Length: 327
Image 1 (tube, helix red, strand yellow):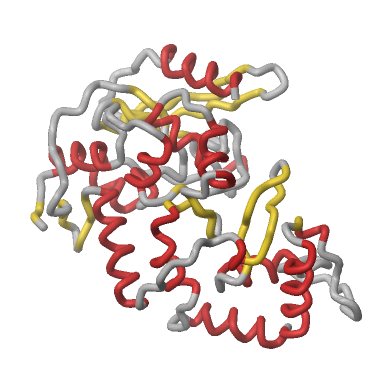
Image 2 (cartoon, rainbow, N blue to C red):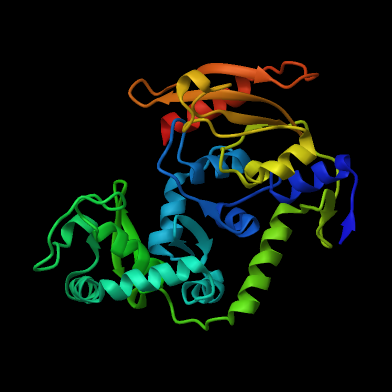
């Protein structure tokens, strides 16, 4: 590892993340990034789709579904999509017990052991099932709770998935289909937790290209530097290029936060604002909203960074609208 100047670090970061225009293929891009984050908010498009569009341009979103549910070259775990070859690492995380949250999960599952057995029995007999298709366990008394409302089925399934006992095996609309993990995940080894952590860190560092370590920008040993074409695209708030806010500030002096949880009167920009990437620079931010009824992309605002010239955004906006309208 070596410390690099900020100009080189920017180029390395953009190249490592496949934002230099050289990315090709959905599966290859997910492997390069390491994972895609899922989120239900889609003012423009779901984050997993927008992250891929930023790199690939117009792509067939059905390919992502095929890779997940038919070819099983991707797997969903805890609101992230991973290449299936990462399962040995993921299974180590499913079985870890070294964090306070792991103990809380174990305690809850132990306290609800009968309910757990009931859910697993139902899935074994009738799965795959939606959460609402699994009736509450006999004798279970519904109660209001800040986590699960009157049904704690969702919480049970999420925690069983965290432990690798059930898996998301498909979707009906936006609803997840659940089944036993043993019927969905292929047989693989399980890495020791220490090795899994090292593998995860290495994959993450390689995908980022550059890390911020005690105020220094440090490049991955295999990071590549080179000219970045003046390509303009928009980034999801969940894009790994800007996900680490401290690193983003160190690289571009660009302070970014997602303001959808900020009261409207206190927002500096807007509800779902996307950073604008031009070449290897973050030059501004934009708030596009896709009207699904009219199949039209509307822009609520554009804000340019100090010292940056305004760019003509007609082409990337037209390409984004055309892709969204065809999806």
